[in-house]
Image 1 (cartoon, rainbow, N blue to C red):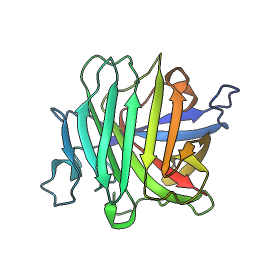
Image 2 (cartoon, helix red, strand yellow):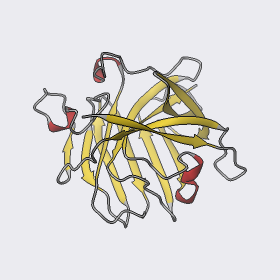
Image 3 (cartoon, rainbow, N blue to C red):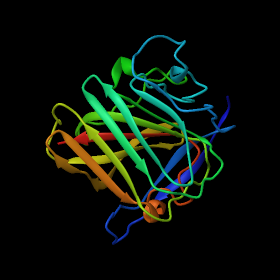
Image 4 (cartoon, one colour):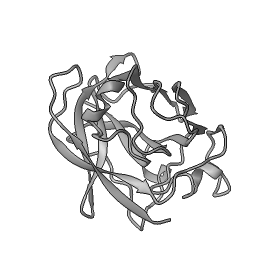
Length: 223
């Protein structure tokens, strides 16, 4: 499958979610994903597992818990089964999608949990950002996904967070190089759970044209 790249931008704002100005890229597959129906996988097996294939994850392949489902205009709630003690929950509010395009959510801890892409290992979060609690990949099948109302909520629960302050980071591409952008979005920490709440109407702060189609990579890193 051939890929092209689109540019997203992060601009400063005085709203409840304030981000520094920055430029980035998201992946756009040449064709949208179409998993065909909800399915859940939470055991690493082999290439026969449909979640661990380039058809579902068209860049780096994460081999943690995985949910393959479809978007709805009324919103979507996904709970990943526990993987090595970590769980992930995502709530997407109602959006502009009404076509039932595919959506994949999968996590990984890093290292052997993530396969190489074009011979390159997945970029680890830098130690200056913090210690990674969980890497999360979302593969969106609808270009320009927007959420006029409601909040996007990401919640990561682990036995013990590797720090007390956990910022959300996004993987970006510049030329042929990838790097992590540490956003000023800091999650609310309670015990071993960190929760990020982003107003859907402010999605343009992170993605000017809405959530792009293709895989996007996030990290929960704590200090």
